[in-house]
Image 1 (cartoon, helix red, strand yellow):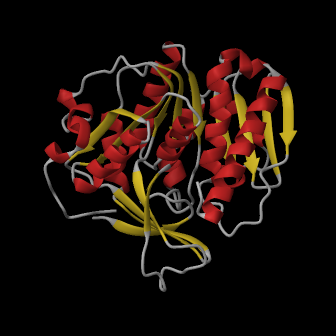
Image 2 (cartoon, rainbow, N blue to C red):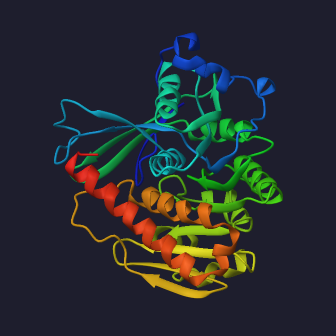
Length: 339
């Protein structure tokens, strides 16, 4: 059963429609087979491969509540999708590992991402799940998600490739499924063996991680595989810590933590010491998507500068500055409606 979830970050539900994938442009079906035993490992190299959710966001116009809306804009959503799209826009080779429903809603999402420059060869269409939908309103900022979270998590687990072929492998939108998190941990170790930087955006949305979810499916095991762990102030609160330094025992000695505190501050801690910078301060009605835009800007620098950047204070300062620039641009675009 798909349960509506009101919540914190845009992620989301179902369509009863069904149809043939042969209608997709460019033979998209061949790039994301619907059975696991049909998958072929891609040899395509990428700067960054993003692993996580692929959803549709349906947004009201600025200043309009969902009750009053007469039309909705349709845009791709989910943390991994947002980061991949922004990286492609910044000129990097970005790929996506995700699952979508084997239905017209999912096929349209994959075709849209492909047209916008994201490598979708690692995306899998699954008959047993549905493509998530999230309704976003900006008066006040609110997200109502229609998702089959458990089915999505298991479908993502089965979509993970045996090889990534990327300089950076980024994990985002962690779901409260122990089986999925264990599979993500194995995938992160595989990316490490390939020599990739492993970056993780915790993005622990309180609605999904309420109750005993944190104890049953502990995401902190995955953190140990990170070269870079990005957390927000909300993530820290949910993890029961107040300072990003408290996460150091969970990480490898050479790993860094990047913590964002909204528009107030961004902090990075690692072998170079600590870097502090102001956040992308703007007076806007909604900050949806700003965190993903920040991550894309950060990764755009790390992907180009490589592993040595993790030891270089100046490189981390550049990465944070770029992240804030991209987040600011994203917020301005969304508030004005102009790309």
